[in-house]
Length: 317
Image 1 (cartoon, rainbow, N blue to C red):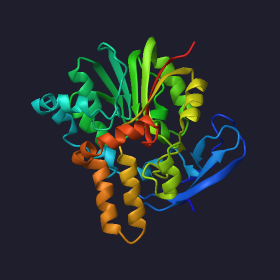
Image 2 (image 1 turned 120 degrees about the horizontal axis):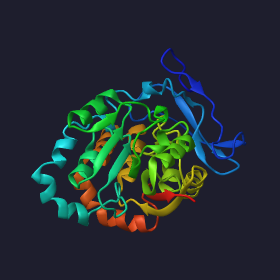
Image 3 (image 1 turned 120 degrees about the vertical axis):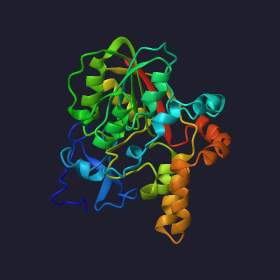
Image 4 (image 1 turned 180 degrees about the vertical axis):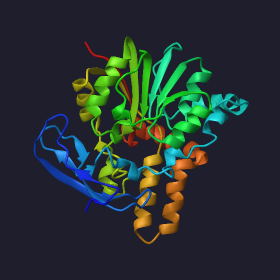
């Protein structure tokens, strides 16, 4: 059952696209990444097919599941590496083996806003290309590391940021949308923050991939209860349209991170705990594995089966 303590409260949420429609349970699971207590369900809306976690921790108490040990917050040094000659020397390899996990439209440098900027790795990459960058990050520790590099970072939950003085040429949100309690509200707000000629680039796990159906509660990208929504291409397109965006392109990411991590989670739950833990670690951190698996990842991406997708969108009419 979902955990109810002094730290966490849960709530039942209606479908943001259909309202109070019926739903069917797809899978149950728990926090396999950090091992925090609670068991949650993923349900599918019978009206539109959108998958969501329900019940879910409330916005006010969700921070319990985002301690400083949460992996995206623990990227000390990631910023400084981008600004060294090492990144420039390896630039050709990055282009050749581009996983499209941070793919943006071919734009001249302008103003960039990143939602969920963590320690500022992507901000540093874009700043080095001449962009004026700003970020929003809920983790005080991660926001502090990004700010220490000289970046303008708003330390707040994305849902609570309402007013920004500038309009942006590009808004980026890498693996953010699935974490939001009210994604349509935030996407609508982002539509007001971008210039009429601007772009939105975001990435989410692809719940339409066969690996989700194979691994079920062991799917690496399930990430309960931090992932509140589990998008498929059609439901994500409908969500963007409801918030005033039109999809300009879907790009399957050329990476097997989710597949390798899912194998690790399945082994952890069985008799191969040690090997499973190693695979999970390799999925998150091994560059050698990513290079070795790139040909297979590129082939599966062409079939829409790598478990992660990057989407570009423009302001709608």
